[in-house]
Image (cartoon, rainbow, N blue to C red; front, side, top):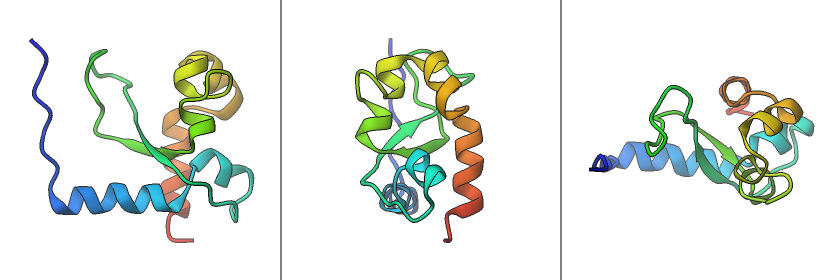
Amino acid sequence: MPKKRKNLTKAEKQELDEKARWGCVVCRKIDIHCITPAQIHHIRKNVGLSQRGEQTIPLCYYHHMSPKYGIHGMGVKAWTKIYGTEHELLEFYEAHKNE
């Protein structure tokens, strides 16, 4: 039976909204001033296949869902070779989120 999703608190929702408004972490890594509309991507490293990870990064549609260039289209291994690991991108976001 699938695990029931946790209801987010107001503070957690606000944090995710701020991440999405910051823009795609991959685009910003290329050009820190480039702010593209972002979706929240849940990092699934070390969690079950059907579970969402607690850690998240903001990704635009192109880098998130695009069949040719998105992490869900290319697969994690191929995507990581081009853009780096999800945790490296999370570290980049954390270091630059106030810029």
